[in-house]
Image (cartoon, rainbow, N blue to C red; front, side, top):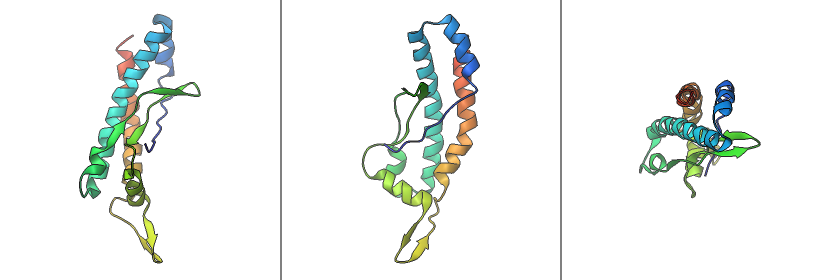
Length: 135
C-alpha cells in the first residue's frame, strides 16, 4: 500500500490529560478511534482529489485506510491504495512523466499532495475533538 503519514503534534496535551484518567489499554483504544476518524476524513479528501483523473474509477475505489499502529512511539495510520499496481498509475498522474524525450504533465498533477496539505489541519482538529470527548 502506498503510504501517506500524518503526524499530529498539537494533541499531546489532550493525550497527557487522558493518560491520567485512563489505563494504557483504554488510552490506546481512544487514540486508535480518533486516528481512524481522522484517517477516514483524509481518505475522503484523497478520493475527491483523484476523482478528477479517473477513467475506470478503480483509483477512487481502491483508496484505503489502514489500522493505527505505533512507529517509534508515535501513533500513525496509513492511507493509500490496496496492493497491486494502482499506486504506479497514481505516481504517474501525481508527478508527471517523460516518454520518448517529451515531458507530460497530466491534469491530475499535484492533486494528491494538494489534498494531503489541505486536509492536514481539519484532520488534526477532528482527531483532537474526538479525544476531547473523553475528557
